[in-house]
Image 1 (cartoon, each protein chain N blue to C red):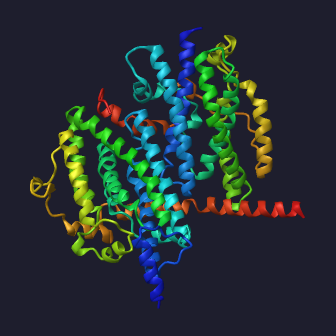
Image 2 (cartoon, one colour; image 1 turned 90 degrees about the horizontal axis):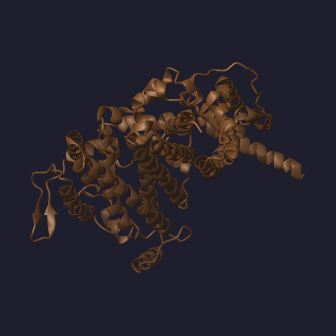
Image 3 (tube, one colour; image 1 turned 180 degrees about the horizontal axis):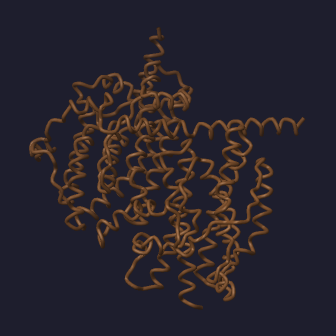
Length: 251
Length: 316
């Protein structure tokens, strides 16, 4: 197995979950109802926990003196390889729910395959994370139904949200050289192969919610190569502030 | 007018250290005081999420970020079960929240101070949660059963909160570099006096104390609890190497307590009146979240109604 491919694979997993966790945690104290402050914080915590485990693993493999925090919190923007969807601003509650639904419905399918990875760490990571992501998906699905099939306003906001995020989905399902190498070596997951199961699931839920599934094929990409949206710089400026202001300090 | 015999029976029951439960008869004044106090406590938890939440996105490490999210999340949980405790007294959560949002209801003034550095997160955990614990340990023995039980549960989580705050302070003030030590001292200077103010007016000036003590809603006076907090906290500050921002603070051999300087009651009263550094900002933030969430709550209700109707139809 190529170390470079494996490390990149881990980094994408860690960055996806860290950046989404960072975004979700912005809701803490600002949710539409206290129960949702709790639910979204819970989900954010799961993501940050998942990313921490992967960064730790990465730190031990790279072994260049950086710990998980140095990797997570001190890289340059172009070194982050999360999918673009994760870094987008939260928007209204419907937009946050749409992203949660899109991502967790993809992520659960992905983890269910990753569980069978020949790589011990990834298989264990998937096994543990599946339990959490099942809950995330349940939570997002419940809200897709409530908001899609709630009031005329919520329906229109929800449709707007799922349309707006649709062009960021393609990146999640794209297999690039890293993914293909990982699949070939038997420890990675083909993202494209998840598409049919995912489409069936989303079609069913959207139909129940009265939402139209967007059909546009074109999608934004670049995150996997470190090419980000304008939003990423601000996210990192906040997230990295203390690490950058006090290099090497212990907290 | 309330029946004198009932009042006496109630008092005897409380005097015998029995807990009052939701369905028991209670004097109107008792009910009103409890609703006010528990609601204030609930609002404090909810507004208290804001100053700490302010640093979630900037927490300095993954571990600190996770701990802070989990702490603020606990506060939302405390808010929820305190609102539930209020509901046992016949007041709906929506009505209480309306009072918070309109500015009619009070919450702990401490959350009207800003968190300007990471050390403030440590100071809040250590001092503010520390002061809250002193108060809440005492309230575990409060005469109203649901409130007392909520306090037992909350105290367990608060002691974790205080430990994480103190741990942040150790990292900064004891093990940190010069800049971190300065950050810790500055935060301590900011939070020391407001923490002492958390116990409320001195006993001589406290409006509600007498009756509340008789009903055993309150078990210790404001000044007793404040002294307990000072005695507990001074050695902790010394261990951290921090200077207490009070020139009158000294150990009193004869009383076995620390003497401390006079609280700035003008500041206290101004913050209570709404003139603290963040009163308006906190309420605006709560109102904004509430307004922006209105369509979500309406949709959830509409969906629940539709589901009920569908079930009724399919059952028919």
